[in-house]
Length: 364
Image (cartoon, rainbow, N blue to C red):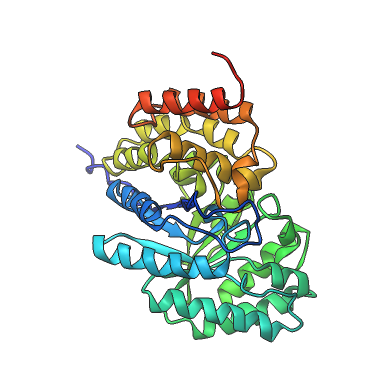
């Protein structure tokens, strides 16, 4: 008899979580202070932790830069980190520069803004995710400027952080990040920053929606640096991996797909790789639909499905972004999610979908 098969290495799956707006205080102005329903927002995070997933908070899915201002994001970090501590949940939180109300004039201003947010996240005990900065993208003249800013931050961070490379399909203001619109050159600059600060980078979150590029990058990461896929189109094969490695995950898609993602992870941990792939592969059609162009509006579908699933009492978003997708788009998202069995109460989801259609004059 040959040696017993070894269990697969553990994967870390984090769901980037949305925020629940307060419908009685929310206004349709992305520049207005965000009004958040804290009870419902934290309840959704407890739902994710109860499933066995980690939570990535105050990031793109939470509408950073698209309705969630820094004051609300700061409060979200504090509340979510305290909740994570209370329930023993894994939490990582976004660190950015979005408190800058006017364009930065110097790299030092960008660093100072990052430092303010980094201190909040570290003081709360959450793992920092250094998000891409619009202010830095607008100011940087080339790779050296990125190296200077990130180097200053990595030198002073108290523990390993996650570096986030968010592609322009999620935020056009981040075009040319890491100093070049040529992705090969940008990749070299990105890897150089990681290599220069051993022990300071836990992992990288790559959101370029290019599986081949992610795999190539993953294979070049220093030992001990994880790749957290942010590819909401190709995540099953990236998490599954190959004989040279695999990706962990930090995905907005795992907000609505959380029950399926958690079950798939359980199957993989039990050594059922075939079952893991079959289940996770079945969710890709819905994820790709939610993230179809303009990709940055995927958050509307995420919040819509949370409403249908009963995680919140209304379909309203900070900044008025519940209007960012069409009624036919939402109806198809409902059909796909229902087909996957994602709704704890299918009758409630059906009733809420019918009420939305009726509100828009659709006779059934």
